[in-house]
Amino acid sequence: MIRHGLFVLALACTAPRAEAQFLQPELRLDVSGPSPVAIEPGIGLTTALGTYARLGVTAGYDVRGAPERAGRRWRGDVIARVTLDPFRQQRWALSLGGGISYRGATTYLAALADVEGPEVRGMLPAIQIGVSGGVRGALILRRARRERR
Image 1 (tube, rainbow, N blue to C red):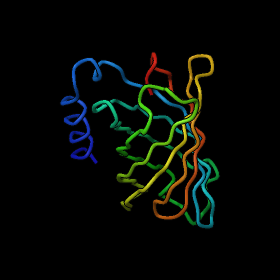
Image 2 (cartoon, rainbow, N blue to C red):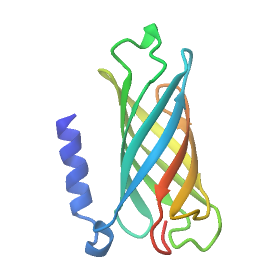
Image 3 (cartoon, one colour):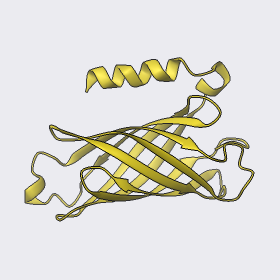
Image 4 (cartoon, one colour):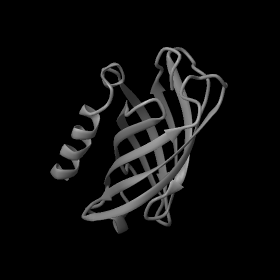
């Protein structure tokens, strides 16, 4: 996990200077399956790797605590995604991405799509769906950037 964290930090440091100065915090509520379904409030940070590419690191904790998930309640993700509307020219924008998700001692590949909405009080709401050791979905609130996604 430490090696992967250092890799993410190295990628963030190689971003263009103006882009690297803005970290976009987010609050999220993830739901993942299959049974038993996990409900995971979480947090994350996203940084731009260029005009279209974004790199995010997130963590969540399964509050339901099903016995089948003993020792696997924490989840961590490292996700790279491409936004198709980086300058907020449309009200809604699609992003596609993938990466790695950790749960306990198990690592999964992740493939995700999210739709980010218009700015509301300095926040950008998003809905995310994907697969990563099962089906997953999330409601996300990201801090808005001035005229950017």
